[in-house]
Picture 1 (cartoon, rainbow, N blue to C red):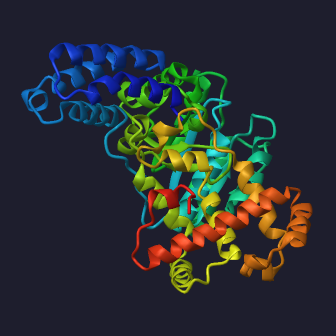
Picture 2: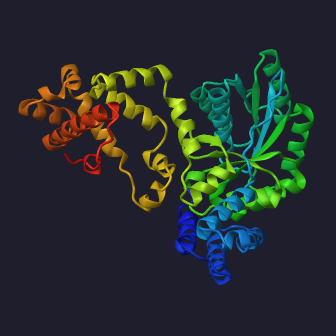
Picture 3: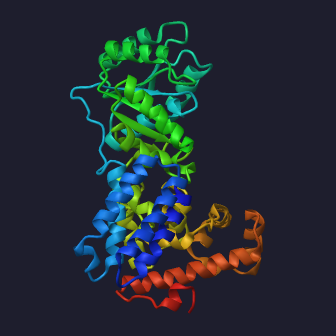
Length: 442
């Protein structure tokens, strides 16, 4: 996510960050590099010009140049201004009481609109405990209704549909009435997309607004199309009144042009971002956190929120008890590993940790290694998982055959688990392990 932009911006600020004293010329040179980085990331030219001017104006203030650490001050200013460009503090939808909250989803074909509808419904159910439903009103694209029905089943939400033989405005009005009758908390309407912004599309959206009286209209745009996505949003803003933006395919966007431009160009905030192919890869868009990620400063709040969604408080207390009593087994290790993996790709989680993202660079974390560890543990008997010390040579060969790995891999897992238990025992007694122990030494 924004890897190319992140690398360029961090490189541009490295020299400033390391200096104990800054001059006006130092700031100007850094801003030239920042400007180039943003333009190469396909950020709107006007946005780049205003951004760099704002950063330079603040960076040349006496409070910065005469501070003890001016370089870090400049980096913070860049982070603040990046967040401001993307909309400042993140915000969520305003929900109607009583429901249903009606949300119209608009966008061009190929933007990922139908999938975004299902992701948003799942998000409302999982994060807000809402009884959300979907309305299948894209009657023109082949198989769009069937796709939404299938995605709705995967998301665990109801789909109101009447096939493709009726007018989409009539279907939407009927779906709203059904949602009210069923006392749903939210109804997300999947509207028809087009290959480009045209009068017919805008007329239909206008009719949908009039008949369904939505609380929010969200525009779905493909982040990977860069300035094209911004142009689409600008055209929608000129002809149809929408309330916020959903950015899709953000995980594949190495540049970040759309995310950094759409708010400044349209005046509409980015509310949500789709960050992967799974239905759970969908989150609120926090401009301040995204700015920190871009600058390699991590995103601790998002990491904590992901952990809280996966970890059960009673399970956490039980795990702590087992560690203190030295009862932590490979079964427990497997449970913890699965919970971490449920939080998303390990590569993405590491990038949320301050400083780690910069060290990773282009290094890829091999998720298959975790699959191998899981296969080895599952090839053990309950006795072996509870007490790995009983695993002798013949047992190692059997486990290696069962897991499709090598005897060396089994031995390495047992050794690392034994070392990990020793470290846990020390830490439970209030003793911090040495650097050599953390690195795997004795």
